[in-house]
Image 1 (cartoon, rainbow, N blue to C red):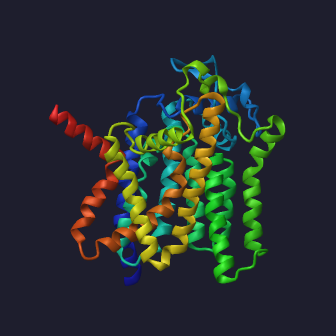
Image 2: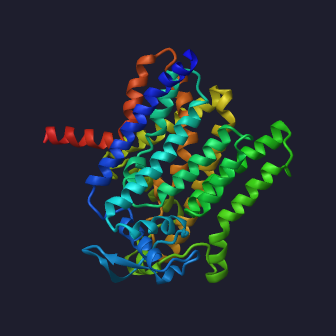
Image 3: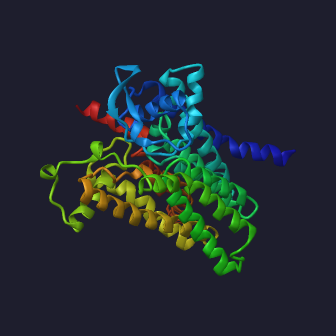
Length: 406
């Protein structure tokens, strides 16, 4: 009885932190003007299209965008959303009783809240004391776009649920291999970037298991994971057969006339690409000086590297997520370069594509913070402030300071 009471007390601070996150996300849902600049009208339009004519494998070229000034009427503008149908078919059922944007946003709040609750509870197993678990919970919730996108209509929230399932599955593998498999299948049916990132995480982790622990390559768990990845890849394979491309690209929206394109060689493009990633890292994109934004991005990654090096318990998990970041960056840069060369598109650099990888990075970052502050406990507070700076609370604090200074 005493042990059960102690366990509940240990979870109470984490529950309060999750509750605070949900309140912030609800604030975004109710207060942020619709449509937001994060493709929200386009996502809402696809949901409406799926309600009117549901289809598992849509012809993306037929999608239109609803009029922003009258959500009951279609505009002639083509929609550039090219994600699989699951998110849109699922949320289309809401139209049976309401077309209110807030109701759709609340469904997304539920998605992100459930995903991050799973991440925090699963990751807490990797730390020994309530204080360590609380620190992990804080860092895990500090991916800048979680609360912002969580309060909007965006299929990133379904992708994050897939990421949470894979993370929880790896923490308890092989007992929860089914959780990894479900996450991989769900990732593919949310968006291609999520499938690539999470398949890389699971693949690296399983290769490490085969090499270090002598696990059989042809085990049932590995077969289930491969089958789940194939299920996740199905929407893109269908599109490849139909059109010759894994995903549809709306050149009419993203294309830039040749005479208006900047002249960039590959290395200048790389410079612009990574500068864009830094600018887009904070929730208030462009709201922090470039150097400050860069520091808030690099410090967690440096601490993650320190944590992985100094904490053997989490090294394999950290290596899987760190390796996936490297693979994703390579794919991301390659796709961005081809998009720029082909149609002049420079919008590919988006940090929110890495949302599904943050739970594993957060584990390693937490271990890094605990390591570097073991003898300098006071250092935890400025680091926590640095983690919060690019998030919604940080943006609000910056805004208040600027308002007071103005």
